[in-house]
Image 1 (cartoon, rainbow, N blue to C red):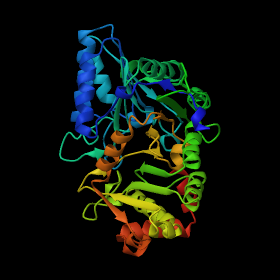
Image 2: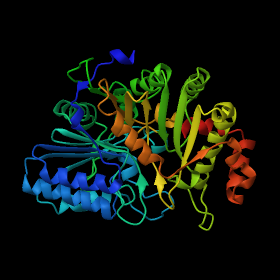
Image 3: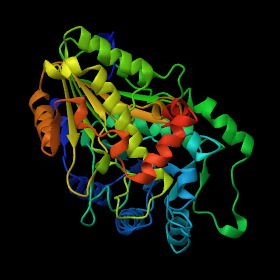
Image 4: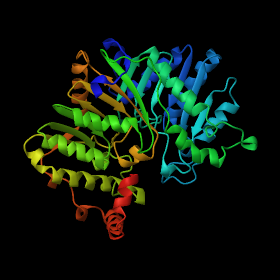
Amino acid sequence: MLDKLGGIPIQPDALQWLLTPKALKAELLTRIAAAVNSIYIAALYLEDDEAGREILAALMSAKDKNPELDIKVLVDFHRARRGLIGHKGDSGNYQMYRKVMQAAKHPIEILGVPVKSREFLGVLHLKGYIVDDAVIYSGASINDIYLHQGEKYRFDRYHVMESAELARSMRQMIQTYLVQDPAVCSLTQDKATESLPDKHDIRTLKSRLAKASYQYESTTIGNRVTPLVGLGRKKNKLNKIVVDMVAQSKDALFICTPYFNPPYILARALAKHLKDGKRIDIVVGDKTANDFYIPPEQDFSTIGALPYMYEQSLRKFAKRQQWAVENGQLNIHLWKDGINSYHLKGISADSKRHLLTGSNLNPRAWALDLENGLLLHDECGAWKDKFEQEQAHILQHTERLYHYSQIETLNKYPAPVRKIMTRIRRLKADFLLRRIL
């Protein structure tokens, strides 16, 4: 039972909400500049763009000021060694890392984690900016759009926790299961002497990561935070906690996910939650707020069909649960704010338990990617108002769905999208695709 789940004690005033991507960037730069002992960053990528270079420069400056500072940046190995999807000729972010470190007086460690042998089979989706005794947790990676460097932003969630034990536990897990693993390698090596990980080590890394866990001084009393990590379908504690939160919720759920394509076990738990007379609010990105959305006036590529596939999954769910939409039990909120995109994840149950996570709550996240999350237990109700304020902030740019027919059907989609999705259905490949998307 979740009531008996242990966690790290945390004082009510040790949790802070940042709300905006610009606030996240400002907090990161402030914390990096003031770091005394260590900075550990885990993200999908640190991009070779203006924001990425600014964060990297801040890390280098902190290292120059204090050469003893332990700095480690961990990103996905495959993502770092390729260009952006749809952008030809980009040689990958690791080229920037290599160039900066070759000129550095005090280099820092930037490590690539090959969770699987190919990127489409699974990536490093671990999150956390751990600076000394503080943890900044967000689903955001590091680039212009996540940090709102220009006109566009990608909306996420941003929380700061002051907890020496949480920071120590997260650093220790990174050290034990990532930094020390033979499959994890430096992304700053000189090209002439570069040594890549052995293929056998990469193939077997997933089995070692499946055993990863956070070790900490635990309590089952009072406000606390439970750090969770998971990879694969079997014995994935993070996935189990998500299902348990839904199953054990007594009143209401507030769910954020960029794409709606829940694993079967989660979709079944949500349906039962509604049948038991309970409430669910789901905030999901409009297809135009998807990372991969391509406006009709731009050249289309195959990856641009993804937002439409996710939208049809949402339509199917809404159609099945239309009765709950009509009686007010199920409230689906579509997020859209101009040209900006939506990347929020997480679940709140009964205004008492709050899961902060980078997991997309989809089959890919639940089976292929290395994910983590922080489960907050608000036993004394100290955070209730703040989480409600965050939810109100999230809902500012949403439109509630009153009928599933408000979601477009296939025949309303642009011709290139119709062509691809018709082909997928004809080949009966949609079942397979839903398992890896």
